[in-house]
Image 1 (cartoon, rainbow over the protein chains, first blue to last red):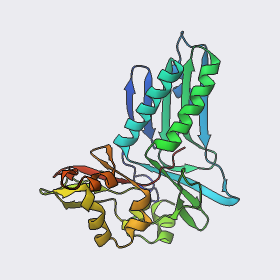
Image 2: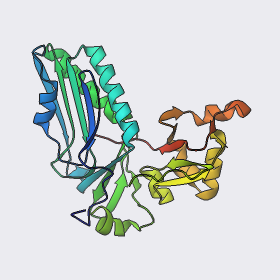
Image 3: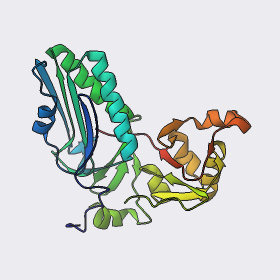
Image 4: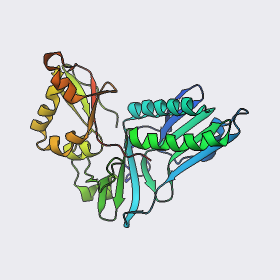
Amino acid sequence: MADPKQAPHAFAGEQSLSEDSLYVSLTYDELDAAKAMARVKSPKAGAIVLFAGCTRDTFQSKTVTHLAYTTYVPLALRSLLAIAREVQQKHGLVGISITHRLGRVDIGEESIVIAVSAPHRKAGWAAGEECLEGVKARVEIWKEEWFEDGGVWRSNRDGGVGVPVVVGGTHEEDVGAAGLG
Amino acid sequence: MSTPKAPPGTFTLLYFAAATSYTRRQHDHLDAPLPVAALYDVLEKRYPGIRAKVLSSSALTVNLDYVDVDEEGARGEAGMVIKEGDEVAVIPPVSSG
């Protein structure tokens, strides 16, 4: 591992599932919107809608230093593919690509990129939004929000202040310095 | 980071997010077979307070399928049993995006 301060990565590169024109993946690397767009391009598609979710620098006016995501890889991929399939069928899409980032994500970087292609733009806009909301509600990925004084696990469901992060027998303060910081 | 294979006579229980913070572990190997209905009692004994703090707001999967713990409890003897080698996971409220 090049950076000893970095939390260990479960895998290198990308873990993905695909089916027909659906593609879903997880990666610790920076996300590439152009790649996502290229995956769904088609002569049958008159519209591509691209969504990028970025790391914001505050939560309820508290300064966020960075985020870190963990996941249950096989289950998250399965859920992502199920959502992609549902949205594609409902909106008659040509293709969908969903990639979620894992590990540390700094402020201003993307944590998720969704690209959908549709014959016409209206279906594309609607599908893109529905796809994101489905991912946020269902996919087994967890966000640690790190502030200057420690980290909390966020919950999309309740939206409130999260549970403090403690990892593997290490005291919370140590994690910021030695584990995830 | 990959989880070691469950030793004979056990199953793997994976922890994520708040469950990891509470247990300070990524996983445990617990004795199999074990009825799903009995799992939370076993965990409460091992990690006092985990039921109220973590399990009550979490879901459970067995071999990547969601299982309704209350429903399995209500089925009594006919309830689902976790077998040797199974992969079980505590799934706290998710927060992607």
